[in-house]
Every structure is written in structure tokens, then in C-alpha cells.
Length: 147
Image (cartoon, rainbow, N blue to C red):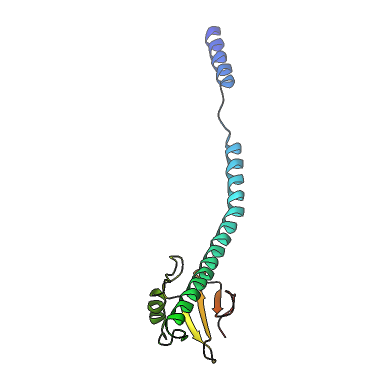
């Protein structure tokens, strides 16, 4: 009987010496830390995506402005005279090198005409849904709609 007790005590001490796993508390602490880091990182990542979409809309407007000026040069100074809808504007600008980015909707650039001859204003909504940008013949892209 004493040998049975001694052998069971020997097994118990060998199990305690070789116990190299993690406790439940340690695993829960690690999961909690990962959750806190994710809660911090995800909103920052979403904000960066929206800034990239806004930059794509501004870039599209700058490219559309160059195409509109090329159109006017080829048409005796007339800025996009027949382009009243987004589809007509897209076709007119495409003939002069404009293509919209994949980030923004294909018909997001709209023409808002001014009152004076030779004046144009192009407007685009960002794919982020948070901003509308405009550009005129004399200004760069601004975060405001056409007047």
C-alpha cells in the first residue's frame, strides 16, 4: 500500500513540474488586450479610408478640369456647351482624356454652369458620402458645392 501511495505522489509531483500550459485567466487577459487594441485601431482605419475617398474625388475633379480646358481649346473657347447631364458630361470629357477613378461613382462629376461666358464649375461627391467638392476654371478643388 505504501508503494502505491509513493507512486501516486511521484506522478503528482511530475505533473506539477511539467505543467507548462496557460491558465484561463492568462488567456482571458490576452483576449481582453487584443480587444482593446482592435477598438482603438478600427476607427482610425475607417477614417483613413474616408480621407482616401475624398482625395480620389479631388483628383477626379482636377483631371476633369484639365479635360474641360482641353475641350474648350478644341471648341473655340466654349466650355462643355452641350453637356447638361452627367452622362453627356462624362462622354464629352472622356474624349479629352478624363476617366473617373474606380473609387467614385462613374457619374459623380456634374457640371454647374456660371452666368458669365467662359466660366464653369464642376462638382463631385466623395464616395465616402461625407463631402462634396467643386472646382472652377480659376480655382483648385475645394470642399464646397458649386455656387
